[in-house]
Length: 293
Figure 1 (cartoon, rainbow, N blue to C red):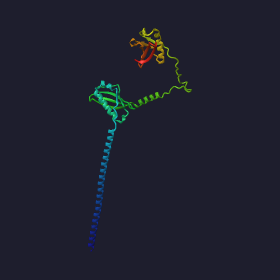
Figure 2 (cartoon, rainbow, N blue to C red):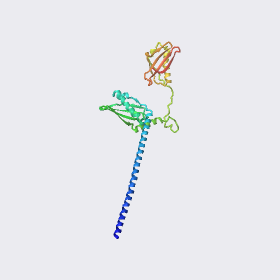
Figure 3 (cartoon, one colour):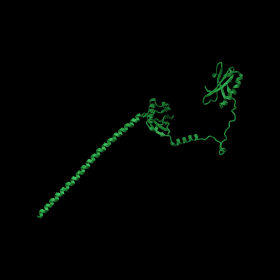
Figure 4 (cartoon, rainbow, N blue to C red):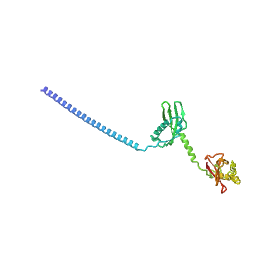
């Protein structure tokens, strides 16, 4: 009986262990199934979000491209002194360079203030290459160093800048000139400041006229003798200090009412003006003017 009882116990224990193993196995299987479904759903959700994001990015890119298309294009810069390159490059290569510079300047926000490109007057032929510089009229005064490769027949453009210390020095010099205070004599500084110049009288240097003989017989002699003093008075009023004047027969024009002749300064004025001397025959008087001939 005892043997039968033990065998029954063993059978019951084995059945219990088998049932427990099946139960644990089922639980483990259900967990794996649950986690697998979650992973799949997460993957699908991520894919959906990625697709939505990609779609939004594409739409944003389209909007940006459309805005750029609608945005007005900046005008091409003005090219100055590029005729200097005509003796070195054929016209089509100069135009090609202008096109590349325009594309580089207009296509970048760095050069929004640029309206001019100035070709500097130094063009260096180094055998295999030709080098020169172009300056932009932006605040930084950007400089392009341009190298033309003769073998490849291509231009390369590199950006350079005028050193900051040079710009600072030029700016300081400009400020010093603009900030100079006008002379003002005060008790504090009258010993340091120079005595202001006071104008006393006009320059009395007499006028010297060469070629007076071209007017002999055309203007009364007594009036001709007055001409040097009349010219001196006129030059003093105009604050003109030139006193040597030449009269030329070829410049005489006359009619019944008046005779005019040009008085040419032997030391020319920078503005090229000369003396127009007219004698009114009815009024018997001279009229003087400073004009360009």
